[in-house]
Image 1 (cartoon, rainbow, N blue to C red):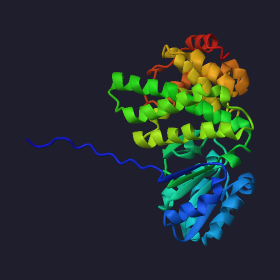
Image 2: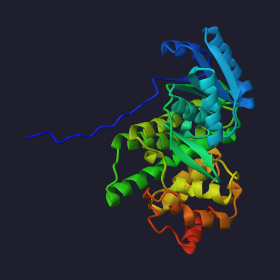
Image 3: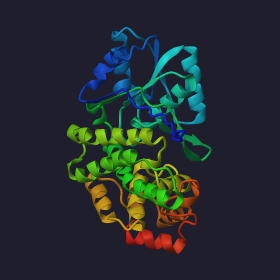
Image 4: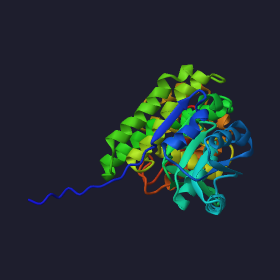
Length: 354
């Protein structure tokens, strides 16, 4: 009998992850180990350049690399195109993103467009994009999640990241904790819509959320130990997406709520903060322990209410009502019809969001 099994899927992962105190000094050695040759283009911002970009350039030059550094702006299609064009002009053999989420997203998108590898050097840990094969890009008034390059390597220096505003680290924690509801949504879609489900990716994603929830009381401002606790789950959360081949293990109804807020009240709160608050409410809808998520976020110092997000009750309700429209192809606890205004208000009230 002819073998009918014909499933094929490629999974790309970072080849090396350096995490810990002072690891930025090893970036030249990492590039040599990867046998990278030619010009390196560093994409950073004015603040992150002084924090880590200039030092990364110096270390790479000591390792005998020719280095070009450019300061980039927000992750927009125009800025991606400009960075890709510069990479071609200088004939960059590889890119390095040094900064927060937008700088790394720009580097990973430009590297994919040009067809060269990139290395991720986070200066903050505000979400799980450090290691993921996805990037957020702004188009018109909305933010889109698009396929991008997986970093060849990651250099997460805890001595650098601890200097970033604590709010960014708390936001990164909230983003990963919200994996709790993303996984429940994924399982629901598997049962009701026969959606492809990866146990391996789900297990990784669940581990990251639980690791942060269980250690929430130990995550505090200005402690490098706290960064050390957080950085591993954040990186593994990104790798879960590479295993799944999509953002499914880390993005469900709570992310749809966040994206709806981006359209209703742009710039009010951070992505991870919004996802954390969304996860409280979506866990309630799933019949799970929403109080546990809320308590973990409070211990970490992440928002748990509309007021802490800088939002009005009306904006929260509107986002809940329209969240199901954000990614109609992605089935979640919100279903196809979403929530009525009355149901949304009741949900937000019962979970103490408003």
